[in-house]
Length: 288
Image: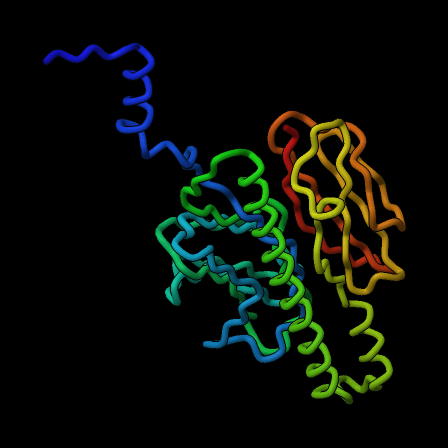
């Protein structure tokens, strides 16, 4: 007996039998932005003691495959060391001595946990070490069926990043308070003076950024960014995206009304308090 296959039957055979690996979409790598964090006075973090100022674990079944860390040091005497630790093992470190400077370190591999750590070169070092914009963690291929799923994944990673940033800021606040209590008569300064210095050095916390009603995509020429910060009063907000710049405003719902391009768009969100201290993060959304 002979069988004749139509063109349609042959096409369906190739599509269903020979190409099942592509049914769920195209594998890609994606990047998670490390938030801008200024970690202040080190207290007892020197010698063999390191302070973790940011950490990240990729989603279950995924690995972090690359880390790029950009930073600056603004001390008033000796300086700081910084390093990337992955799976509990130091991968790379750098030292900035003499007070001021910027640097960049990176590493690659297959990691379940990434940590950014620093320490002072001596006890009672002053001034912050700051993670700069452009610091990223690359996560291995994520299979997605369409752009909406990719956008949702990136939005979830952004939310996790912001939660970690909030935790780091809370740890900073506790560290400042401990330093004040331990140094109430340091150099003859009063507790009131120390308290005012703590307030001066506090940074606003960006607790969450998202699209209006949680949206990750737009089909038009505008996109609304909703910002949750702590504190929520006495702060200013600014959003930039491609050619768009909102300027500093008091409204935490900002409409990106121009500059949106097809595909991925990354917005930078900045929050500044009355002392001029500023925190920032990023949010990626899609125009489809």
